[in-house]
Image (cartoon, rainbow, N blue to C red; front, side):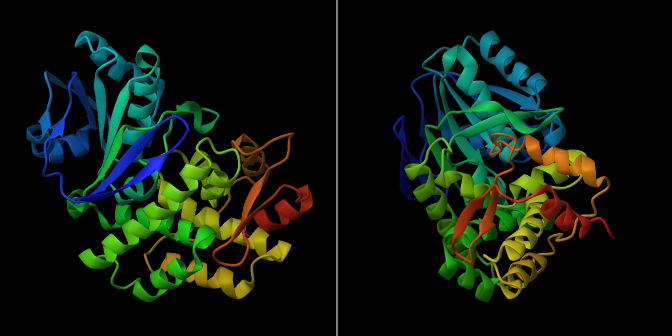
Length: 350
């Protein structure tokens, strides 16, 4: 097993690559949190690898619909019933939803205790488990309630991907493509050349390392998304609006981001920082993984107003993340209402 480190003003922690062969050692109590699907598959695999004075388990419901205060409350109640304290640790075993909920619960339990990320989906391994962003959804939008709480460690084990459905795998690839478009043109070219072999072990590990290295570099420079890190939300301004309008859970997060990237690329072409040819290449790469690239907007005005719930919005202006060619990115908040609506019009037809 090898690792890379993330160092922020608040914490330095390792991201481990490889099999969970050594024992995970803890001096205090451990609460393992998973969902009903992942828990059934992998709890028996994980528990023997944990060494702790006491191990307790909390199972929450599976799905984006359960990324709520109720799920957080269930975790906290389990923690209190088993008398966890400030020396205890929570372990998130699952995808991005589980990681976000557990990170949030750990961040508010007794004003913050350690938690460990063991992501079981490709999307969580390359993105959601790294960087300390935690949170839950509410009626107003996605991840609008939360905090930054860095994990004590992250364990990237490709073993967990063996049972991942093709659709979930593709959703993770969308996030890998997102990182390449915004920060690494050579990595994008590698993905372009290897898209037919990405499911092989060697190519997958290369893709994992490439994406995680980008995330690591960005988080080390901007832990709390005050500037550079916001670029990793490329495609998310539209993607979150898609998830809200279609109902959480209808599309996987990576699928919504895929469509969101295509939508914001249309704005980038209008602004002149992305060529039509580059936009088509990005779209083609997404489609090669059977990712959706066209969302039919049901209500243009309602969709437009949903964009203002994006966390990057300030002073009543929507800040868009635009690819500046492939491999670079810029922030732009000066699109007029008419310009945005003209682009949305392209996505109102089937």
